[in-house]
Image (cartoon, rainbow, N blue to C red; front, side):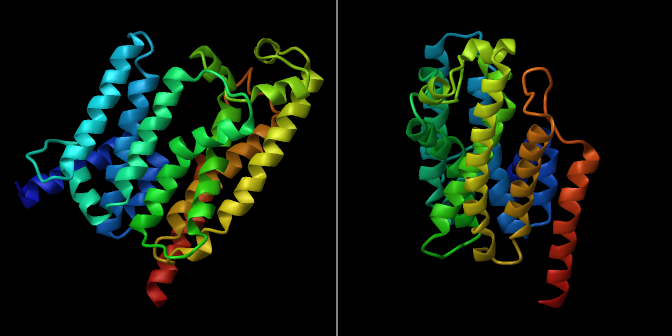
Length: 294
Protein backbone atom coordinates (compact mmCIF):
# COMPACT_ATOMS: atom_id res chain seq x y z
CA UNK A 1 0.00 0.00 0.00
CA UNK A 2 1.40 3.37 -1.01
CA UNK A 3 1.53 6.19 1.47
CA UNK A 4 0.33 9.70 0.71
CA UNK A 5 2.81 12.48 0.04
CA UNK A 6 1.89 14.14 3.34
CA UNK A 7 2.48 10.89 5.27
CA UNK A 8 5.89 10.52 3.63
CA UNK A 9 6.83 14.14 4.35
CA UNK A 10 5.69 13.85 7.95
CA UNK A 11 7.78 10.73 8.38
CA UNK A 12 10.90 12.39 6.97
CA UNK A 13 10.30 15.37 9.26
CA UNK A 14 10.06 12.94 12.18
CA UNK A 15 13.41 11.39 11.17
CA UNK A 16 14.91 14.89 10.97
CA UNK A 17 13.73 15.69 14.51
CA UNK A 18 15.28 12.48 15.84
CA UNK A 19 18.55 13.40 14.12
CA UNK A 20 18.50 16.93 15.50
CA UNK A 21 17.85 15.76 19.06
CA UNK A 22 20.58 13.10 18.82
CA UNK A 23 23.23 15.25 17.13
CA UNK A 24 22.60 18.87 16.28
CA UNK A 25 26.06 19.08 14.65
CA UNK A 26 25.31 16.42 12.08
CA UNK A 27 21.73 17.62 11.67
CA UNK A 28 22.91 20.98 10.32
CA UNK A 29 25.52 19.30 8.14
CA UNK A 30 22.82 17.06 6.65
CA UNK A 31 20.29 19.91 6.38
CA UNK A 32 22.02 21.64 3.46
CA UNK A 33 22.15 18.49 1.34
CA UNK A 34 19.69 18.29 -1.59
CA UNK A 35 16.27 17.19 -0.32
CA UNK A 36 16.30 13.57 -1.53
CA UNK A 37 19.80 12.91 -0.19
CA UNK A 38 19.05 14.76 3.04
CA UNK A 39 15.90 12.77 3.70
CA UNK A 40 17.64 9.44 3.10
CA UNK A 41 20.47 10.38 5.47
CA UNK A 42 18.00 11.53 8.14
CA UNK A 43 16.06 8.26 7.90
CA UNK A 44 19.19 6.11 8.13
CA UNK A 45 20.72 8.14 10.96
CA UNK A 46 17.46 8.10 12.95
CA UNK A 47 17.29 4.32 12.59
CA UNK A 48 20.86 3.92 13.85
CA UNK A 49 20.05 6.08 16.88
CA UNK A 50 16.99 3.94 17.56
CA UNK A 51 19.08 0.76 17.55
CA UNK A 52 21.82 2.30 19.66
CA UNK A 53 19.37 3.59 22.26
CA UNK A 54 17.77 0.16 22.68
CA UNK A 55 21.13 -1.26 23.75
CA UNK A 56 22.59 1.71 25.65
CA UNK A 57 19.51 3.01 27.47
CA UNK A 58 18.00 -0.28 28.59
CA UNK A 59 20.75 -1.49 30.85
CA UNK A 60 18.35 -2.33 33.68
CA UNK A 61 16.13 -4.71 31.71
CA UNK A 62 16.94 -8.39 30.99
CA UNK A 63 19.27 -9.09 28.09
CA UNK A 64 16.70 -11.33 26.40
CA UNK A 65 14.22 -8.42 26.32
CA UNK A 66 16.75 -6.20 24.57
CA UNK A 67 17.51 -8.99 22.08
CA UNK A 68 13.77 -9.30 21.48
CA UNK A 69 13.55 -5.58 20.73
CA UNK A 70 16.44 -5.81 18.28
CA UNK A 71 14.78 -8.75 16.52
CA UNK A 72 11.56 -6.76 16.28
CA UNK A 73 13.49 -3.86 14.71
CA UNK A 74 15.07 -6.22 12.19
CA UNK A 75 11.65 -7.60 11.25
CA UNK A 76 10.25 -4.09 10.84
CA UNK A 77 13.24 -3.20 8.70
CA UNK A 78 12.46 -6.09 6.36
CA UNK A 79 8.76 -5.25 6.29
CA UNK A 80 9.07 -1.51 5.69
CA UNK A 81 10.54 -2.08 2.23
CA UNK A 82 7.43 -3.99 1.11
CA UNK A 83 5.11 -0.96 0.90
CA UNK A 84 2.99 -2.10 3.82
CA UNK A 85 1.02 0.36 5.93
CA UNK A 86 3.87 1.59 8.09
CA UNK A 87 3.90 4.31 10.71
CA UNK A 88 6.33 6.93 11.96
CA UNK A 89 9.96 6.50 10.98
CA UNK A 90 9.26 3.30 9.05
CA UNK A 91 7.52 5.16 6.20
CA UNK A 92 10.61 7.28 5.55
CA UNK A 93 12.92 4.33 5.98
CA UNK A 94 10.94 2.21 3.51
CA UNK A 95 10.98 5.02 0.93
CA UNK A 96 14.74 5.47 1.33
CA UNK A 97 15.52 1.75 1.14
CA UNK A 98 13.59 1.39 -2.10
CA UNK A 99 15.73 4.17 -3.59
CA UNK A 100 18.99 2.84 -2.11
CA UNK A 101 18.44 -0.93 -1.66
CA UNK A 102 22.00 -1.86 -0.64
CA UNK A 103 21.47 0.04 2.58
CA UNK A 104 19.24 -2.72 3.93
CA UNK A 105 22.26 -4.94 4.57
CA UNK A 106 24.25 -2.03 6.03
CA UNK A 107 21.48 -1.19 8.52
CA UNK A 108 21.24 -4.86 9.49
CA UNK A 109 24.97 -4.74 10.21
CA UNK A 110 24.30 -1.92 12.67
CA UNK A 111 21.86 -4.19 14.50
CA UNK A 112 24.41 -7.02 14.52
CA UNK A 113 27.05 -4.65 15.91
CA UNK A 114 24.76 -3.60 18.75
CA UNK A 115 24.06 -7.28 19.45
CA UNK A 116 27.79 -7.65 19.98
CA UNK A 117 27.53 -5.10 22.80
CA UNK A 118 25.10 -7.44 24.53
CA UNK A 119 27.15 -10.60 24.20
CA UNK A 120 30.79 -9.55 23.83
CA UNK A 121 32.30 -7.64 26.73
CA UNK A 122 35.94 -7.87 25.70
CA UNK A 123 38.04 -8.23 22.56
CA UNK A 124 41.02 -10.55 22.42
CA UNK A 125 42.80 -8.67 19.62
CA UNK A 126 42.45 -5.84 17.14
CA UNK A 127 41.04 -8.06 14.41
CA UNK A 128 38.05 -8.80 16.63
CA UNK A 129 37.65 -5.11 17.47
CA UNK A 130 37.85 -4.18 13.79
CA UNK A 131 34.89 -6.43 13.00
CA UNK A 132 32.88 -4.63 15.66
CA UNK A 133 33.89 -1.20 14.35
CA UNK A 134 32.90 -2.18 10.82
CA UNK A 135 29.42 -3.15 11.94
CA UNK A 136 28.58 -0.22 14.21
CA UNK A 137 30.39 2.56 12.32
CA UNK A 138 31.68 1.60 8.86
CA UNK A 139 28.25 0.29 7.87
CA UNK A 140 26.82 3.81 8.18
CA UNK A 141 29.60 5.17 5.97
CA UNK A 142 28.90 2.50 3.37
CA UNK A 143 25.22 3.44 3.49
CA UNK A 144 26.12 7.09 3.03
CA UNK A 145 28.23 6.54 -0.07
CA UNK A 146 25.35 4.65 -1.68
CA UNK A 147 23.10 7.66 -1.07
CA UNK A 148 25.82 9.88 -2.56
CA UNK A 149 26.15 7.48 -5.52
CA UNK A 150 29.91 7.06 -5.23
CA UNK A 151 31.27 4.72 -7.89
CA UNK A 152 34.92 3.92 -7.35
CA UNK A 153 36.67 0.63 -6.76
CA UNK A 154 38.30 1.80 -3.51
CA UNK A 155 35.35 3.80 -2.11
CA UNK A 156 34.20 0.95 0.13
CA UNK A 157 37.66 0.49 1.65
CA UNK A 158 38.06 4.19 2.37
CA UNK A 159 34.53 4.48 3.81
CA UNK A 160 35.20 1.43 5.98
CA UNK A 161 38.48 2.88 7.25
CA UNK A 162 36.86 6.23 8.00
CA UNK A 163 34.18 4.46 10.04
CA UNK A 164 36.86 2.57 11.96
CA UNK A 165 38.68 5.85 12.67
CA UNK A 166 35.53 7.45 14.07
CA UNK A 167 34.72 4.44 16.24
CA UNK A 168 38.27 4.14 17.58
CA UNK A 169 38.04 7.80 18.59
CA UNK A 170 34.76 7.10 20.38
CA UNK A 171 36.34 4.16 22.18
CA UNK A 172 39.26 6.24 23.47
CA UNK A 173 36.99 9.09 24.57
CA UNK A 174 34.44 6.86 26.32
CA UNK A 175 36.66 4.35 28.15
CA UNK A 176 35.25 5.21 31.59
CA UNK A 177 31.63 5.45 30.43
CA UNK A 178 31.81 2.13 28.58
CA UNK A 179 33.45 0.44 31.57
CA UNK A 180 30.49 1.56 33.66
CA UNK A 181 28.23 -0.34 31.24
CA UNK A 182 30.37 -3.47 31.52
CA UNK A 183 32.19 -2.96 28.22
CA UNK A 184 35.86 -2.58 27.44
CA UNK A 185 37.01 -2.30 23.85
CA UNK A 186 40.80 -1.98 24.02
CA UNK A 187 42.07 -5.45 22.99
CA UNK A 188 43.25 -7.82 25.71
CA UNK A 189 46.55 -8.61 23.99
CA UNK A 190 47.40 -4.90 23.84
CA UNK A 191 46.67 -4.44 27.55
CA UNK A 192 49.06 -7.31 28.18
CA UNK A 193 51.73 -5.85 25.86
CA UNK A 194 51.61 -2.51 27.69
CA UNK A 195 51.48 -4.22 31.10
CA UNK A 196 48.29 -2.62 32.35
CA UNK A 197 44.87 -3.92 33.36
CA UNK A 198 41.38 -2.50 32.84
CA UNK A 199 41.04 -1.81 36.56
CA UNK A 200 44.37 0.00 36.69
CA UNK A 201 43.25 2.20 33.80
CA UNK A 202 39.99 3.14 35.53
CA UNK A 203 41.75 3.78 38.86
CA UNK A 204 44.43 5.92 37.21
CA UNK A 205 47.30 3.60 38.10
CA UNK A 206 50.31 2.65 35.95
CA UNK A 207 50.14 6.10 34.38
CA UNK A 208 53.29 5.71 32.29
CA UNK A 209 52.05 2.45 30.79
CA UNK A 210 48.62 4.00 30.24
CA UNK A 211 50.15 6.90 28.31
CA UNK A 212 52.13 4.52 26.12
CA UNK A 213 49.01 2.47 25.46
CA UNK A 214 46.93 5.54 24.58
CA UNK A 215 49.59 7.00 22.30
CA UNK A 216 49.66 3.70 20.44
CA UNK A 217 45.85 3.72 20.13
CA UNK A 218 45.86 7.32 18.90
CA UNK A 219 48.54 6.69 16.26
CA UNK A 220 46.56 3.77 14.90
CA UNK A 221 43.33 5.78 14.77
CA UNK A 222 45.17 8.49 12.82
CA UNK A 223 46.31 5.92 10.27
CA UNK A 224 42.67 5.04 9.64
CA UNK A 225 41.82 8.74 9.35
CA UNK A 226 44.52 9.12 6.69
CA UNK A 227 43.05 6.25 4.68
CA UNK A 228 39.45 7.35 5.28
CA UNK A 229 40.17 10.88 4.10
CA UNK A 230 40.90 9.47 0.65
CA UNK A 231 37.16 8.88 0.33
CA UNK A 232 36.37 12.61 0.18
CA UNK A 233 37.71 13.39 -3.33
CA UNK A 234 35.64 10.46 -4.66
CA UNK A 235 32.38 12.10 -3.53
CA UNK A 236 30.54 14.62 -5.67
CA UNK A 237 31.42 18.16 -4.55
CA UNK A 238 27.73 18.81 -3.86
CA UNK A 239 27.78 16.27 -1.00
CA UNK A 240 31.44 16.09 0.03
CA UNK A 241 31.14 18.61 2.87
CA UNK A 242 28.89 16.21 4.81
CA UNK A 243 31.38 13.38 5.52
CA UNK A 244 34.14 16.01 5.63
CA UNK A 245 32.47 17.68 8.63
CA UNK A 246 32.01 14.32 10.36
CA UNK A 247 35.66 13.44 9.78
CA UNK A 248 36.91 16.84 10.98
CA UNK A 249 34.80 16.81 14.15
CA UNK A 250 36.05 13.39 15.20
CA UNK A 251 39.66 14.18 14.31
CA UNK A 252 39.40 17.28 16.49
CA UNK A 253 38.07 15.13 19.36
CA UNK A 254 41.12 12.87 18.98
CA UNK A 255 43.34 15.96 18.99
CA UNK A 256 41.66 17.17 22.20
CA UNK A 257 42.28 13.79 23.81
CA UNK A 258 45.97 14.17 23.00
CA UNK A 259 46.07 17.80 24.22
CA UNK A 260 44.62 16.65 27.55
CA UNK A 261 47.45 14.13 27.87
CA UNK A 262 44.94 11.31 27.31
CA UNK A 263 43.15 11.96 30.61
CA UNK A 264 39.80 10.46 29.59
CA UNK A 265 39.19 9.02 33.05
CA UNK A 266 38.91 12.22 35.10
CA UNK A 267 37.15 14.36 32.50
CA UNK A 268 34.82 13.97 29.56
CA UNK A 269 36.53 15.16 26.41
CA UNK A 270 34.18 17.17 24.22
CA UNK A 271 34.32 20.07 21.80
CA UNK A 272 33.01 23.51 22.63
CA UNK A 273 30.38 25.17 20.45
CA UNK A 274 33.06 27.52 19.13
CA UNK A 275 35.28 24.61 18.13
CA UNK A 276 32.40 22.91 16.33
CA UNK A 277 31.46 26.17 14.62
CA UNK A 278 35.02 26.61 13.36
CA UNK A 279 34.92 23.10 11.91
CA UNK A 280 31.46 23.26 10.34
CA UNK A 281 31.42 26.79 8.89
CA UNK A 282 34.33 26.48 6.39
CA UNK A 283 32.82 23.34 4.88
CA UNK A 284 29.41 24.99 4.54
CA UNK A 285 30.93 28.12 2.96
CA UNK A 286 32.94 26.00 0.55
CA UNK A 287 29.78 24.11 -0.40
CA UNK A 288 27.92 27.40 -0.96
CA UNK A 289 30.53 28.72 -3.38
CA UNK A 290 30.74 25.37 -5.15
CA UNK A 291 27.01 25.64 -5.72
CA UNK A 292 27.30 29.17 -7.07
CA UNK A 293 29.89 28.34 -9.71
CA UNK A 294 29.00 24.86 -10.86
